[in-house]
View 1 (cartoon, rainbow, N blue to C red):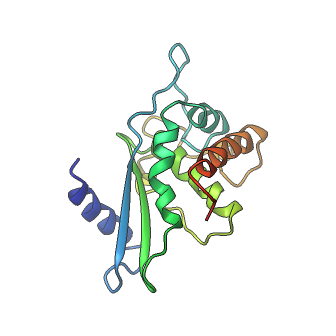
View 2 (cartoon, rainbow, N blue to C red; view 1 turned 90 degrees about the vertical axis):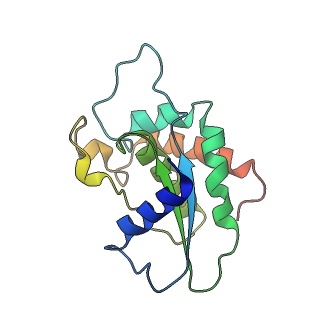
Length: 162
């Protein structure tokens, strides 16, 4: 997908949730297509915030490159502007959901104000649980916390944490 077209699509998806028309919006697009489910393992029927999915993807070799793009979040934005980090894959149920939740955990640990919005949430349930209690990123799971710690370690290798 062309990044300019994707940026327009992101702005359109955010418009009902927040005021994107009256202030500058910087969009960082992060493709998650390099993440693949481990060979030989049955595909999960849960969304990407499930602890097992988060753990598998956080330990995937491609996660380092995916983590590198949003690191720019630490750079200052002009006052009053909005910085949107948009993760995308093909279906919006596993890879992009996982990457967004991992980044959210990292930002929360660093006391960075942010909001997670899953544009494809209305499509969850086509091939997944649709977001059951196990998939709730606010429910404690040691496996999910291990995935968040792994992602935080990747993010912190890019320099001093903002």
